[in-house]
Amino acid sequence: MVTNVQVRRYRPRQVIFNPGRKQAARLDLAFSREQYKVLGILVAAALVLGLLITQIMHHRSQAATMEVERLQAMHASLGDEQVHLLAARAQLMSKAHILALAGTKFELFEPDATQVRRM
Image (cartoon, rainbow, N blue to C red; front, side, top):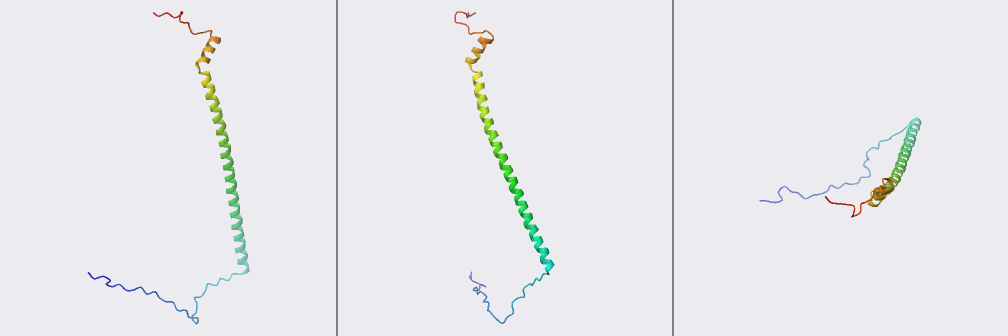
């Protein structure tokens, strides 16, 4: 097998600077005075519209941030209330509270060992 068959060395092309050579013609845009006015008005309107959209987005993000803070505060207060309610439920369901309530409201009490007979 023969290597380097049909392979040539890379030779970069050299660009020769010729000052007498004419450069490519530039696109010359000549606008009239009225066209510059219209272009200026369009640019100003686009700038104002961009600033208006930016202010609307800023207002919406501030409103959303305030709503999130309000909801977080409500969540924290509801969590505190839940803790208090769980503590109250635990106190109301305690055996000592039930026995005290049964004794005062219904005049019930636990029987002594001498009062209970087995059958």
